[in-house]
Structures are given as structure tokens and as C-alpha cells.
Length: 471
Image 1 (cartoon, one colour):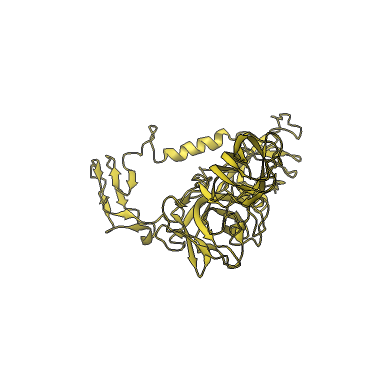
Image 2: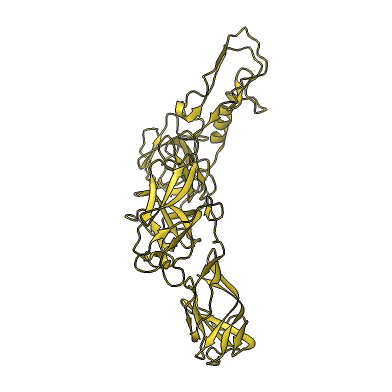
């Protein structure tokens, strides 16, 4: 008997070889990419010609299965909704048709009435709080969902209810509400049950430091590594991926990773964004980065000391278009100097986020200044939001010894800007309007539209600095 429930692929169109009538013909589409292989499917041949002109006298729908690169015709699979045709290099498409829809309805009506409810002798609902049975007089056996592995559920006992055809049923509830589901059985989440991108199911981000080295791991909700009986799920791109083994990435001390141990950020908390990626050879990989906007592997830098670097568990077979999903954020600190040792804070809901998030907290950095004999003191605030960084500070000033005024930023700019929005500046104790320019990693301040016209003595600084630019 043919499958009543046949899968479908949207917008499929290809060509295939010439073939004649009969069910034993060989049909080889030019492409079978994306076509379902676990159910029969219905393909439409010669609905249009290669120019897109409709050819109704040549059209034939054929039911079969995809095996390898061939489309194998099912028994009685020719001439679905029509007559058999001889096809010469036809256009082949997947088009919804009455036969597919009617078979779905026929399959549903086997155990449902036209009102959508189960027929009277069948179970209406089977769930963790019990099973509801409709009135009926047919033989029926109701069994708790024991078909799944014992490890999938925490139950006090198995419950079986039987009755013969002389019994009249009344609505009852089998109550085992004290039982609790503990794990998602394999298969409950599949590619047909799409969750939002980047959200973990039964999963946690777990950062830790041992011997000054930073490790970021994916764990199950119970704190253990993922396994076949304790899987973690995540939608990466348009596919739900399953993690069934330990997954982590470690970055040892001794390297200025992400430039987080440089002058601006050393010994200061930095927010890192955790990613899961996928390719067919490496499977699911984990990484973390300072940027919150990546969607594919080539959005990151491969240079370990670059602001946009991503520390990834394996890149052996990484390719530019590999899908990556941001799944959360955590805080860590890299020390200054050749040691570059890692530390992490006590984690809270503020500095460890277990969901996609595309901005940092308001953090601080230490600029490097030029144009001063006595530099301004204190740190400056910054915040990264998707692909922009916002820098602000009410007031900073020092003693001038040059007409120029520059300071470094915590994240390199991807676009340089000149003579941007006016700001307040202080020059030799007097306040006036100024402007700012940004190069690759340095901001230059000036008065009016000039950039080197400060007095080379006295107090020099900014008033209520607020700048933002693209990273």
C-alpha cells in the first residue's frame, strides 16, 4: 500500500532523462537535492516546457521514492490524476495536488471523525497527567507511554487498562500526575519541529577556568556532558542539530586572545558571545567571540589576537558559508603582560546569559592618549550593540603638551569617519565646541573643523563625550 502521508519540498524544479510508459522505467532527475527520501513523493512531469509554457497534454504526475540519484516508480504510481505519457527531457517539479491531499485526509479519518476528534473507542489524549478515554463499546487497551525507554521518564509504575466489547466506557482520567518527565526522548525534537534559532533545549553554557586556562562547554540541564540519553538540541540555520557527546573549547593562557590583554582591556571584564556552528564533516562546533553579529564562519577573523577572532573547538573543515548561531554570553578577564592568564567572575544572571543576546553590558576600558604631559585619569565606558559600539564619559581632562588630542578605542572601526557630530571640548581651561574623527583604532578630537588646534599647555579634555561607530 502506498504512503498516505507523503512529504514535500517547496519550490523544487529540475529536469530528467527521456523515458516511456510503464512502472519499470528508469527516471533520473538532474538533481534530487532536498527531496524527501523517507516517504513516497509525487513528482509532476511536463507541466511546462523548458521555456515555462504550459503543456497540459503532456503532463503526468508520478508517485515513487528517491533512491540514490533515481526516482523509483511505485506500484500503480504512473498516471496519478491522468494518463501515462512518453516524456522527452521533461521539466520535473514538485507541485501540491489533489491525490496527495486526499490521501492525507483518508489517513486522518482512519482514527478521527469529521469534527477532528478521535472516534469513540480510541484514546483522545495521552499525556503526563493522564489518559482521557471517550465513551465507546469496542475492545480497547490503554497503556501508558511505556514504549519509550525507561530512562526517558520518571514513573512510579506502569499502568494498563483493558476492557472487552461488552463494556460501556465513560470519560475517565488515569491520574499519574506525581510522575515527572526528566528527559526529552530521542526524536521528540526533529527537523520538522523548528525552535527559534540559537536557543538551547536541555542545554547550558558552562565557562570555567583551570590552571589559568579558559574552557567554555555545553552541558545538559543536569550539569553533565550531553549523551544519547541526555541530548542537547539547537537550531543552527534551518536545521535542529543534536549534541550527544561532550562539546567544549579551551583557550590556554600565554596569548593575547582577542586583544583582550592589550592596554585598553587587560585585567578588565570583557563580555564574550558563545556560538554553535555546523558543517557536515566536523558536525556541531562551539566557539566564543567578542562580536555579537556573526551568522557564518567568515564573519570572524582567523587571527587569534584580532578583536573579531572566534575561538572555535575545531576548524579542520570550516568553510566560509558554514552556519553559526549566537546562543548566549559570559564574562571573563585576561590579565596583562606575557602571562595573559584567564579568570572568570562568580556567575549571575547578569554576566552569564543562557539565550541569544546581541549586546554587551556597559563595560569600561582604559584609553591610551597622545598630546598630554599628564594624561586624563580614569576609565571610559563602552557598550557593543550588534555591529556598533557606543563610547561615553561625562568628563576627562589632563595637562596638554601638544596641539593634537587622540585616544584609542576598545574595538577597531570597520569604517573610518571624519568631522563627526560636534562635542564639547576644553582647551587651556576654556570650553568650546569640537568634533571627532575615527581611524582604524584611534579617535582624534579637535575644535571647530580642525584637528590639531589645541593649546599645547594648560588643561585639555572633553565634556560629555558620546561617540558611536561601526565595528
